[in-house]
Image 1 (tube, rainbow, N blue to C red):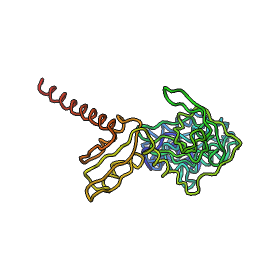
Image 2: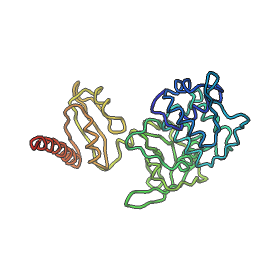
Image 3: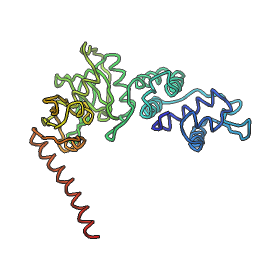
Image 4: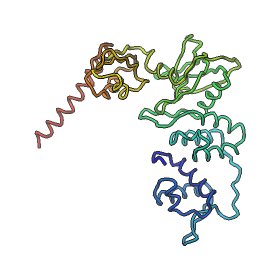
Length: 326
């Protein structure tokens, strides 16, 4: 078992194991969950705090079991609580959508006993891959995400209020083609009727979503993950062109598809093509390159790379000065 699973996922697995094997020992639970016995006791405490009476006994016939005579009451999750649980488990383990996986199986059992109005949006969210959040992860409002996922599945237009930083918010009608998660950020790939163009919206910036009566049909050849990667790399204000002194098969290991399109221009040279609204941020991403590179465009990116280089060199100077003062 992966050690980066969320506590919610492990607590679900522990409950499943105790229900399936009454009297299971802490040692066996620890082995099954891939954690220490101390962690097992912590997860048992979490379940007890949630009202699940897990009893424990010492000795050769001891172990953990659900309290005698206890019947699991009907789950009374609100929609927001159910959606939050699904997203928390998904962030800890991608297989939350797989019914054959222990976490996916436990989550499925919870969803099956929830009322349909609560279970339906939670089940829709469950089908979105959301593992491996990156440092820029931003979880959206669970209810908003569920509305957009369901609207995409039903092919119904939505009216969203989209927050645009200091410029305030604006309403727009969009056809929600798909919801895709990249490095912990949830994106809505859609067609904007205001701009008559394809757009990529960050769902954590959507403050309101209302499903409309209008139906739509997405493009027949739509590949949502590929389209999101292309949109993330292109369509922004400042053009990016960088030549790297390394073969393309090496460069693609350093730079994700969402950051740039990589094309070979020689056996040992690669061109990066993209665009960005934030040259300073993009300059920082280029520090992942493990070979010399040359910024061809834009001038804004060249300035940002120069500033990043000055900061890095200045930090080395500070270290040398500090050693000299010792």
